[in-house]
Structure formats: C-alpha cells, structure tokens
Amino acid sequence: MNNKYETIKTKIKEVNKETFEEVALSVFRYQQQNNPLYHKFIKLLGVSPELVTKTEQIPFLPIQFFKSHPIKTGKWESELIFSSSGTTQKKQSKHHLRSCSWYEECALSAFEEQFGSIKDFVLLALLPSYLEREGSSLVYMVEQFIKKSGHSSSGFYLYNTKELTDMLIKCMKKDQKILLIGVTYAMLDYAVDHPMALKKVIMMETGGMKGKRKELLKEQIHHRLKEAFGLNSIHSEYGMTELLSQAYSKGEGIFFPSRTMQVMIRETTDPMNILPDRKTGGINVIDLANIDSCSFIATDDLGRRYEDGTFSLHGRFDSSELRGCNLLLEGN
Image 1 (cartoon, rainbow, N blue to C red):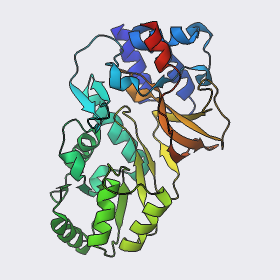
Image 2 (cartoon, one colour; image 1 turned 135 degrees about the vertical axis):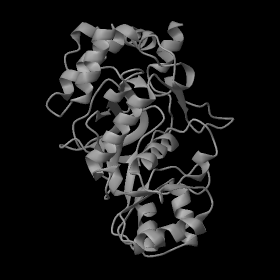
Image 3 (cartoon, one colour; image 1 turned 30 degrees about the vertical axis):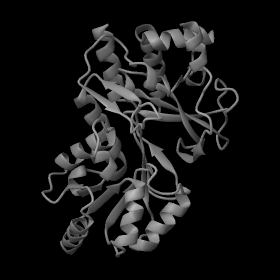
C-alpha cells in the first residue's frame, strides 16, 4: 500500500489539466479500497467502483460526515486536526491531517500559481475570531505564508487596527507589495473605522460573518470595500476546514481552482446527476490534496461552473441534509 500511496502522491504533485481525470480516478480507486467510511457510503449508494470510468460518475461524500466521523484513508496517527468554528448549536467539522508538510506544500503551490512567489509580499492578516480559537486551517495556512514571506513586517492583527493602519502606511511608503488578507466581517469593520487609499495592496477577503454582521451578497461586500479603500477589485479565497486545496478570485466573483482541485455542479434534487456548465447547483469538489481523507466532497455551497474550469458562488443550501447521510445512518 505504501508504494501505491507514494506513487499516487507523486502523480498529484505533477498533475495538470490533461492528467487530472486519470489521477482523480486513481485516487478514487485507492480511497474506496482504503477508506472504510467512503467504501461503505459507495456501497450503500449501490455504485460499483469498477464501473466508474470518468470523474462525473464518482460518488461525492456529503461534507457533513466530517462532523460525525474521523475521515481517514489508511491507518495513521494525526499530526494535526483542523476544526471548523462550530457553536453550541452547531457541531464542529474535524479534518485529520496525516502530514502538515503535505498541506503546507499544497497550500503554497495553490497561492503561488495565482499570485507568484510569496516572498514578493508583505503579508498582513486581519483574522480576529479565527485567532481566538484553536484548529483553524485558515490561521495555519496564513501563518505558514507569513513565515515563508520572509518579511519582518508580515504578521497577524487581532483588534489592533491602528497598528495595522500604521504598518500599511509604512509599507506603502517603501513601495512594497502588500497582501492584506482578512475575514469578511473584520474587513468591513476596518472599512468603516479606517477608510484610506490603498496603493499596490491586494485585499483578500476569506468569507465569513460569524454572526458579527448581517449577511451580505458578495457584490455588496466588495462594493463597500472598494469604496472605502479606493480599490478596483477585491480578491477572495475559497477554502474550508474539509479541504486542503484552495481557489482564488482576483475580482468579479470568478474563482480559479488550484491544479489539485476541480469543481463540478450537481443537481440539487439528484446529487448523482452532474449538471452542464453554466447551470446553478450544489458544488462538488475534487480535492486531490485530500489523499489522506476523502478527495470527493459534496459541499453545502451553491455555484456555477464555466467552460474553463473556473466557478462562481451563489449562496448555500437552506437545508444541509444531503442524500447519503441518512443512507449511512440507516446502514449502521
């Protein structure tokens, strides 16, 4: 199994558009054999793995299983566990990591595909609620980016927004390339308290109101941020606890997935039916970086895929109970 595992990981590292389907099918066969939960899920759906010959036929595991089961392919001890920001009413998702270095490699590769070397940036992070809890995959990723940027000015900001403003001004005076990344509600609060012209600054919101503000459409959020900071576009990051790959938008709400990630759109009333491009439905993610958990995830997000593989977000399901969860419960 180890030889097969290492071979698949090498293929994932080298994957491109032309080889993606072949590698994804290899990962599917490996996971359905070595992930007991995913194997059971496939069996209860009545899918014969040997008849799966293209990615559209692969069953996608509902994301809710990360709240109820440790999702592991193979037998190994967790180096780290990412957890979602759950509340007393909402159970946390947990994502077990076999290797922190693997996640770091995949996350850095995804970023640099879109933006170039991380060393070109001073990275300033406004992630208050995430910094106040343990297990945030976003904080871990940004922490690694800050370290790898190599700039002494890079760093986290909690509620000390005056210091953040001073640092932004200092870096802009030095004509440095700046990435300001933050949770959406904190960015909006910052826009109210510290509006200013941000030159040569990439502002990236990561989503999330966390009950701090009224939910707004992306277009409304970006309009407010552009107005406050004199920017032509607002960048976005699409990632989550259950995924190890990310997609990035440089504006206009269009997300570019990394090499290890592809999105498909499923029909909302029939999860096994994959819709053609430009149709709105549930977002399925193939995340090859999830080789140690499950690479085929049916998310709670609604979206639309385009011919070049990019996608846009169009809200979330009102009800998160997807077909498959009940099947597995009934099978216990």
